[in-house]
Image (cartoon, rainbow over all chains, first blue to last red; front, side, top):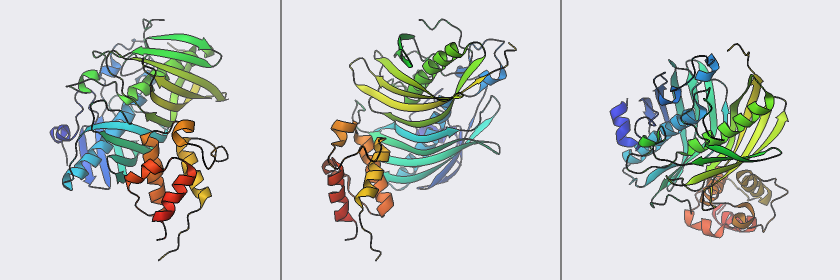
Length: 157
Length: 141
Length: 82
């Protein structure tokens, strides 16, 4: 539904930290399904010693959370654009709660994020979501708060 | 301690430059924010901000190192949960991130890491609570 | 219309959860910012949870008044059940 070029028109993130490849479904104001393919060519795998065990190749949780959060960011910003609500400022990861990890992703896996937009209050959006690899849920997050900051200092006053 | 040891697990960057201070169950990790670290070129092209999730990475890598040193060869620690994280001030190139991490054993295989991260100017940049799962890996390497 | 009454203990629970403190620790008059280092993110979280629980909309401009539990009760009471 949205390809990489479309995503780059919505999110300010760029290679290699742009962590969403494709949007499969987008129900504005409600829900997004987006994917990110994990490959061994990514910078996070640079320099791993040859004798590193298989577990060393688990996709880093920090990047997984970034990817999930970016899927949420697309949902929010796309929703706002569709409703012709002016969206300005820098997209900031404000906070998250109750994130649990129940599996891993490895090179060759495709992360599939399902994120729900729960509430938008001014420049703040509350979301929750899950990440799947195939039929296995590998992450659940109870609450993500994304924020748009207008000032250049990006400080939540 | 410099980050000269080869990191044996996938990570977006070496997120700890040194661990400067240790008390019982408390470690302080230091990370100099520099624009040419991996991934930062895309965050963002016009101005660099240390991504919030990389602060999680800093705390995780510091705690992991402490737990693995304590547990001996084959000990592995991975993130099982992020109970809570909030970001209250940005980290820009030139800033120094100091993460004070308090490690508490919840049971023999679970460690809670409560961290407060500050910038050079003393301002809190983030507060987070992680749960790490600790296990022994077959030392077949 | 459904009668919804604002219970202080319900609000205490919401605020304590957001500020990550025990409910019996949070007094009626503790200043959220001074005592618990609440910032704008925490404030907006409290507001969002209250809106969700009571199915009301409270303007962000009210946040400036919601500095302790008593003040939160006052503000919320004005929007709920009226």
